[in-house]
Length: 146
Image 1 (tube, helix red, strand yellow):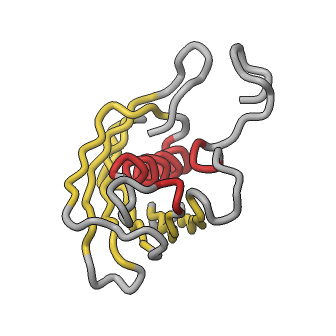
Image 2 (cartoon, rainbow, N blue to C red):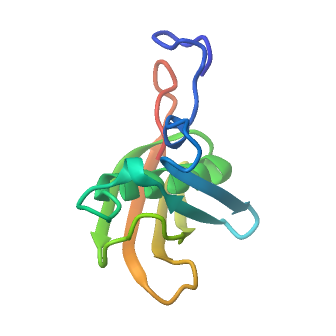
């Protein structure tokens, strides 16, 4: 949050930290609170390269974590990541559009259990599947996403 201890006041979501157009995470999220679902379209740019021509797995983990965290915040309030498990199935070529399809599996109080799939934009190719668990994030300084 702006003005929080240790911040400059110019805070933003981590995926928005790369400022060059098309260089990093180019994405848009679509959230449906009533259905407890979020979809995110993303086109990874050249600053997210791991092996030549492929998106770095850590960049994909960031995309998944940010998507699950946004969904968790909308349905349960501020939570922090307690567990994030990702199974990488196929690499994602740089510059291709991928779809993150995330949903809330269940909620126990303010603890949330989520799942998502990272697929090609047409939905035919599975690149990764993930589960996440979030716990209440009312910590000193209010840090954290799922």
